[in-house]
Image (tube, rainbow, N blue to C red; front, side):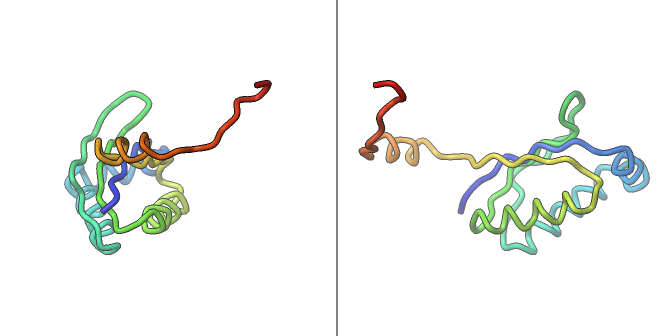
Length: 106
C-alpha cells in the first residue's frame, strides 16, 4: 500500500478547533478519514514551526490521498502538503529502469 508523508499547518480557525477538541480529538478525526479510505495511520505527531502536524499514512492509492487532501483543504482549517514515500526496493527498481533523457543544450 502506498505510503504518504502529510505535513500540515492550522489556519487560525483550525487552531481554535484544536484548542476545543484537543490532540486526541484531532487524532480521532484523522483516523476516521484514513480508515474510511481503506488506509491506516502509521504515525501522527504535533509540532511547532512551519508545520503543526506531521502524519505518515498508508492509503490504497494516490487517488485516495488526493480525495483526503481535497476534503481537508476545502474545510479551510488546514494548509497541507502530501509527499509520496518510496521504499528502498522501489528506488532500486527505479534506478534499474532505462529512461531516455537529454539535458537541455546537450
